[in-house]
Length: 446
Ligand code: ARG
Image 1 (cartoon, rainbow, N blue to C red):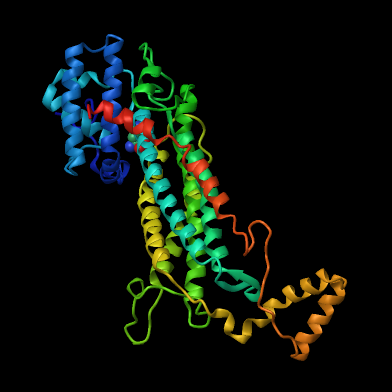
Image 2 (cartoon, rainbow, N blue to C red; image 1 turned 90 degrees about the horizontal axis):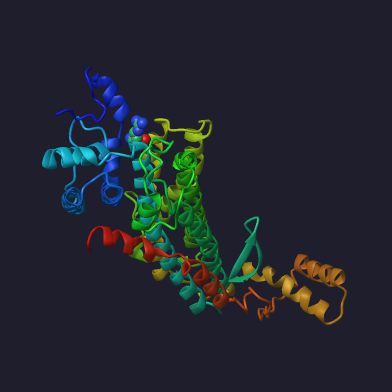
């Protein structure tokens, strides 16, 4: 039996095959379950328009659900000589069911199949990323609340600047994740549209019922225009990559802070010993390697949108094989970010905070603005107060009054964490993950 869907008379050159198949046989494994879900929906629709009998559909569904279980157990393989996941599933069906298996490809192309698989895969991965992002958010808010009274120096230009607090520091990264969640929400919504039925990119002469597959697969709507549906390949990945990059940016910055604050010269935080690594030569070392690796991985993730753009930027409309390469960068990105999110949450929950940083005289000068503001509030013109305190500092006569009263919204004394939590809830709580999983379970008879 020919293993190429398109194989007719001439043989395939093995070198050309190796080059064109590339890493598909390994990467497409991530898409297997989604390819099968798509086939269940597609064959249901084919039956509804008289392209399959009811019995044929039932037979196909039974076998597709078998294959789904094989994939769930991690036992699905793309055999030697088979190009991709789409070919492998069809091969398994035809081996088992003969002509019935050969009927399933009516009204579709691998171009819309891979589009669909990517959307279903991404939808599911985004759900996990959103969940992990929310978990880190919750840990940061908890740490912010329990350290709201612990002061630390704030820096500009890496010069001691003004009083800050651990309440502010942890809370800042929480609020940053709330904004990142907005990107994730947009990515999810954009991804959640059905491309199936666009076939090779120009539709089909069969009277496909695309509304039906849209509902069966739990999409919000379809990508209506078939040419646009195909244009979504690469565009969807790029936009999702922006959302991942946004979260990664927050993590990378936080990781840098944590490494720096953990250094002996700062000593603001202590990473739990189990989260540090030793040196082969210096017996005293407890290195923050976890945060350093996390920083590098997250910086690399921020290159993902650009990498995707460079692959697809100057392609005209219509399918091109170039798009296959995006999978190599895009599919592994979710696991990478997930691992970083889990590590970050683990450490943030266990990080120790130094409550006595400000006993150290070297930070006294950061209370200068407090003193200037106090004098100004008592009636001295701001510029005169500024000069008086500046001269005192230079003369070494300035004494810091460490009582601070910051009351406005978002400041040390008024973190607005409840508002930040509400903001996060209003975004995260508004993404309807249920709809997708309910539809997928129904296709699987679960
Ligand atoms: N492996 C291909 C991809 O990822 C599947 C689609 C193949 N379509 C084609 N016209 N060669 O793009």
